[in-house]
Image (cartoon, rainbow, N blue to C red; front, side, top):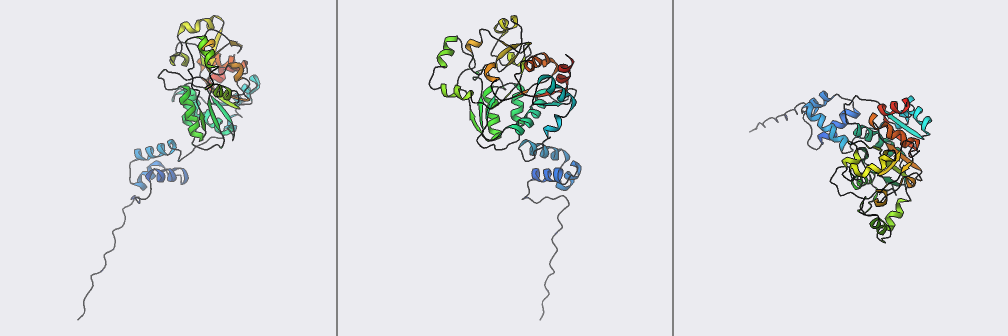
Amino acid sequence: MSTLKAPKLAKPAKPAGANPPSLNPMLSAAWLYYQDELTQSDIAEVLGVSRASVINYLHEARRTGVVKITLESEHFTAMRLAQQLCKRFGLQRCIVIPDDQGRRPAAVRLGEAGAQLLSDVVAQGDMLGVSWGQTVLALSKAISPQRIPGLSVIQITGSMLATFAFSPELCTSNIADRFGARCINLHAPALVSRAEIRDLLYQEPALIPQLQLLQTCTKIVFGVGHLDQDSTIFGSGTVVTEDLQPYITQGAVGVIAGRYFDSAGKPVHGPLDERMIGLTLAEIDKIPMRICVAGGAAKAPALRAALQGQHATMLVTDELAARALMDA
């Protein structure tokens, strides 16, 4: 007696667009977009998701460093404005980013460009000094995660108690984290109440080694501030208008790392200096590579003064500031 075996049923075909669960959709989207050059709509169809999801995947891939997009910064130094600025102010290198007519925050765009340049020039064994401010913070967030052996990242001004987002300690720790570097924070206030307290702190054995390390910086990155009421120096909460009046009376037009200078870039001294902990302009000027990241037409006078004082050896700026610098 024979028996008939039931025929094997074919497995249902996998529906188009079904992605194996072992593949991360973010990684898949990134590969399909950047490597295979599919459109976002095509990727949505392949992965069986919405186009909005694909956009989110691609954004997350860039944010987490899965995808690193770089523009070779040396090409931007060849732009005419950049070359003119190098010639006028004796810069070793200059990057000018094009005007986007306010579509994105200027600090963010400048920070991204600054991150590209800093990643190009920072090297093994460097002692990188870091100032603070909105642009420096944006730069710190824009660095693609990487590892620079033997790199130390040093906070060049004291810490600030004000609860603002662009503190020196945050800028420093962010950059150290992105580069996989040693982070050296300056464990002292940026501004103390009296000059004699500052003098005592400079004699404090626990603080002396940190202050000595500041003198070993091989590179530094900083922004430039102006002294209008909407400037970062006021937004930080560390000073008020009355504090700056002695400096303004002497002709101060800008500030770098809490240190003020006039239209020729010469340091302007006042009562705040006697209470401040951190590098002076004269000490900053001794650092071999000094990267200034600043832009916007409003900052042009302060930026021009900083460049005339030769406080920077490299500049990252935008088209508006560059044109204002050249028109003066």
